[in-house]
Length: 370
Image 1 (cartoon, rainbow, N blue to C red):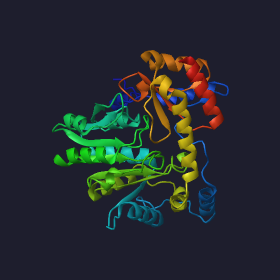
Image 2 (cartoon, helix red, strand yellow; image 1 turned 180 degrees about the horizontal axis):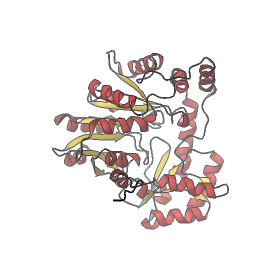
Image 3 (cartoon, helix red, strand yellow; image 1 turned 90 degrees about the vertical axis):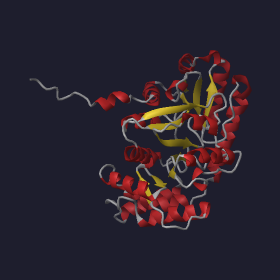
Image 4 (cartoon, rainbow, N blue to C red; image 1 turned 30 degrees about the vertical axis):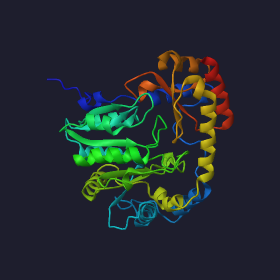
């Protein structure tokens, strides 16, 4: 009997290369495109954070840390949570290899084969793939046309097989920010069946029109995820953190021990500095960019105004996003079709994380194409 040493595990058939990655690969072949596709800040890591990481490397902080993260960084995170939420308990904190790492740990820790995970459509592309990888089933709640997450829709999606609800506010790709009233209503629905909520708050600093409200301040059975990648432009440093029900965080920590091991040590050393860094100037710059997008495309495209993150999810003229994206790329503008983030292909995502000049140029081109 011949054995094929290259036969791939069945689970890999459930996930494919991200549509965003395909756009990145395309960008590499273009000469100087106006890139409105990339999901990372265009500012650099603030100097004090960089200086602390360099200093840490010089001091020999180059080895493994405790799996759950250094005591110094977890103390800083706990202090930040005490300031924001008034928490003063012995809760568990886990420093992860980015929020992506936290998501993977949570899915593998919580989901049994066939169990259901509810999240809004449109959604961050990684959710569906990680649920599938863990053997779970995705139950998507349609939030078109305004992307508001109504409790009724979530309640209708719940079955005896529901394992968790994922919320992402501010949202990638829509820029939607959930109001306190919306969160309270969803919390009530979740509490009825004691369902765990994952609150992915990677964009929490980028909230433009109202104070940010976290699900963790409302509903106890919340697994809170935050990170350093978007807030402080530390995307390549691979560092996030989570807290929530102790039993869940402890099991995630065990799984991290046998997978990621720990977040990078020099990044952790700089984490406390990052948490103490004022990013209000950068946030104000992104609010201004958001306003540029709304002024240029809002009325013309019938776009819902994004209230946070650094994305807009824009209706495609003619209703076919892939076709419109091809036209944009032919005109040297990179954007991402909605079918990467959704069961529909009616919208396209813009990231306005670029210079004002490039953004203005790109918006002019998109306007002329409409």
